[in-house]
Image (cartoon, rainbow over all chains, first blue to last red; front, side, top):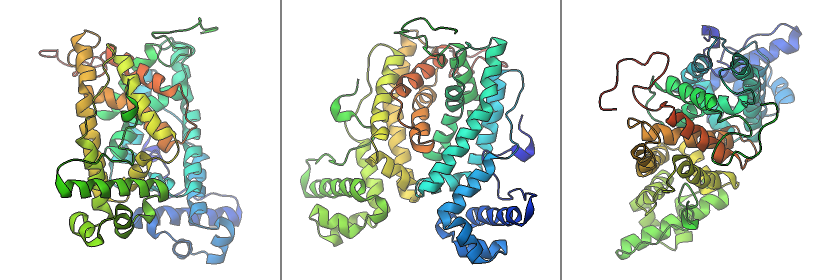
Length: 221
Length: 221
């Protein structure tokens, strides 16, 4: 299960201060300021000047390195992709997916969070959209062992596509909480994890998948 | 399968002109103008004055009836909820879900559409968010027979929750195309439909659902 320090799908405001010299320290201060201001005021009111003031860094340094708000958002997301996050390993596909879903649920269900602000920003800043895509690519890649371990245990077919299982498990949470805006249902993480695991066991994510028109037999499946 | 006139998940710009007197005619003209301007310029540049000019309606009439841009967006979505849309009935749960997914995919995959613009607007206007929620509630309610018919045919358990199946089938499309912004994969509608149908057949959406801790036996399931 996720430890308290990784209980969110995206970096929480207190971005880790990095060791590695003055540049790294400034980056840590600036990105922490971005996260704090985003959660406090939303990205509509985020300015480079406000970030510089909060970070205690000269504004020309911020403009030189990050250029604009889009650059700051993109770097905030990039900084989350090189952290030490790793997926759960409970010994069961459904329980691993449930642990992942609890992290996503926590990030989305508790009112305005950095996650929801950054997703909103991604609709308006191409830089932020690309960075959010890279962040999720990174999380999907790191989480692939949840599925490959299940295949090794014989829980799911060997040809099961990890990314498709992960997207199927988490997508209903994003859909319900961000788009449909239903009240957070504590049963949702379990229901979505169970459905994705059941579909995976049935071979729905093995390619070529079984179905009404299965096509030629898989090789090495 | 969806007919060409219902090939989108949300109303396309040419909102149906209703019969029913001058008020209904003005509403049709104004909502058609909103849809056209949204797709052409995005909602950031949508103004009541531009809508009035495009619709050929006096601006005070628009202000009086719709108040502001949020009111216009909300009414555009409400107008879609009372159309004649109905779900497919192919005789198979997976094929019905596939037909629904083809409609969602068409609305999301073809670059900026009214659907994507309205979803973006929902992040910034509470009126639009509420109206989008009502629109989806309406579509889920109308699509419930896809699942209840499958239950009647014995394809899925009788206690299967229609809404959970529908959300599971469509959510990966919204997630991939709107949030992850992956290139549209023509195999996605089938993969998501197959996964939702497989999970439903396995009882993942029957409540209380089978699983590691099934709880007491269901009554009337």
